[in-house]
Length: 112
Image (cartoon, rainbow, N blue to C red):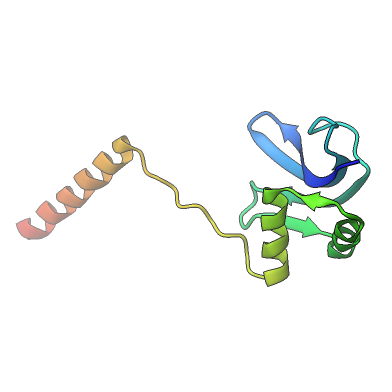
């Protein structure tokens, strides 16, 4: 039996909330799981990561394989650093507004 430590998605549409679960790899993502070992909420600022590292280490010792995303979350919790924030890209419309505002500010200063 191939056991994985992976994320199970919960929460409403466009409002994800994840549980870190231990499950058979053949089960569906949000299906039956063996054990819940943590939670992850990417919507809070900073991101909320709650993991039971003792349980996770026990499962890894038994042969469970963490998914790439769970392995990354485990590294973040073990390092003690907050989760890195992604840089927000501005849209072309917002960039144009910012440029117009900067130009208007420059004109206002030169007029004085």
